[in-house]
Length: 260
Ligand SMILES: [Zn+2]
Image 1 (tube, rainbow, N blue to C red):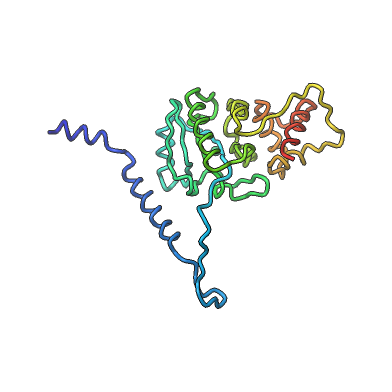
Image 2: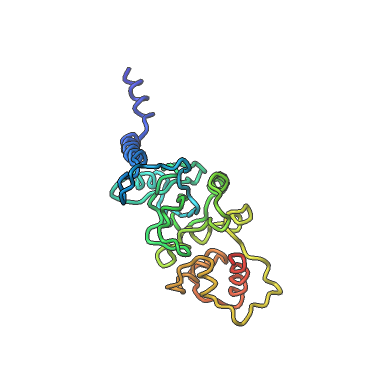
């Protein structure tokens, strides 16, 4: 009998208490959705609800590294109200995917951020966190799981190829994730994010403006040095470099043409 109880106790979901809180919060939002718009705005004599609508959907995917030491640590972090941070998905080093939040709900992963003219990134994006301490390569099972997930999200929500980006892209002054080891080219080859063309015989026009190009790609260029560092980390695998030489300008030029 005691052994049976012990087995039952061990198999219990360690997140059963916070899962209750999840369900309670979803119920409250569902209640909001059921509310009709007020009928008496500006004297309308009756309410005419449209018959044509659906749910808003994500249009961007933001990839992060957790900067923590294990998946368990991150699951705990994302289930403690005091941290005020979360993501839709957490992918562990062994390839396990934890889907922590319904894609239609808003996770708190972007923080103060900007991409193009979008400033409320959390409202329009899916956040994916990869278990990684910030200084190590990502594992093969982790990237494989990520690629499968990205494929599902791209198809389901019709997310544009260019809209698979990193946290450092939308917050270059504050963030460096995913770190310099992240295989952006492997992603781009599969249709998640853009990659540059061969630059061998390329001549960049004298008038080409680096900062303007970074802005067109989507970077917030108020701090252009930070944007350059993010660009070089992502497309050239160079950390801690914020100077654009000729070779970098060529890469930037071919990318900028893709974003035109
Ligand atoms: Zn992040």
